[in-house]
Length: 441
Image 1: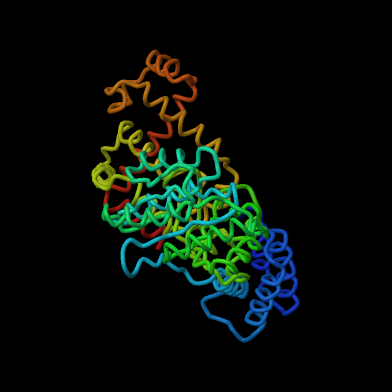
Image 2 (image 1 turned 180 degrees about the horizontal axis):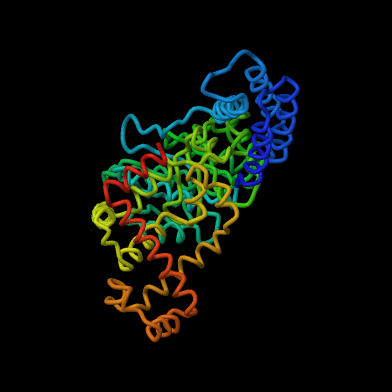
């Protein structure tokens, strides 16, 4: 989502880096460009104005650290002030008597039902016992959609059809949750415009009869400043406790994510970063700021790896890498584990220094490459995977036919794999490890 903004900010910082010393004039020129970049990204004007004023005050002052160049100092200040604008991270409030009620609200089409299922999945993985409540009685198939998602996740869904009123359904669902020993109840309410008085009153009634610990607005980040305005209006009526911004992975300017906390005072608690049921991340301002400034996000990447990759298999793989016994069968296994983490371009974007490379590689292209590699290795026999040296010309032609690729592509994969094996052998020796340490030390 922040690709354009990241590119512009990195371009500005690159220009600053060419200067030995920064004058007040240099700082002002750079901040004018930062201001334009933020406005073009649809960040609220007042938020931009306050942000630039804070950065300028610190950047032209006496704040200089000996470990930083002047340009690095400006980047550090921009990063810190961006984190300040995004607000403090806040987790869900799941204290007090169970079941804890979480009420999801928002406009039609913001992705509430899918988000309800994602949130339930997140809580289940965190050790809670969630129950979903189908309180959207207006949208055709909304109840069925939630029931299908609940079944896929093994999470109970409370539904009464479309005839009872949503407040009645929600009230009875809490009794059902107590009977079933569910620790969290997630209310999936119908989408509505904040100007629809009757439907907004219905939400107030649901709030009154269920006493939720969390009222979360699900907002489409791609709508930019509209998402901020919607948050303001819902907050006036319901006193929101948090926001979930969806479609953060979409092709939009992203200003809502930067503006919404500063304008409404309501914290962002989660980000919807994709279509898969696991694509819901807790919001950490420092991590998002790091992504926006093109500095990667290793912590989120490590968390994704921990959730997606089989730890026992990872330990076995590490042993094989250390002993240089890594073969094509292992390579295929690792490829499938990495694919569980999401698009390769998204993963690369989280690695510091790789964000620009990731932007040059489209998700479609990397997915095609991974599928091609998987198809080639899958077309090999077990003997060929364990010992690629036996793959002669006729075998290559058979593998190419079986995988729908060319002999040249098979040769390319085998060549890359041989290079990787040689590197593993070098690094498996003590001397190789010492050389590596010197390179990066």
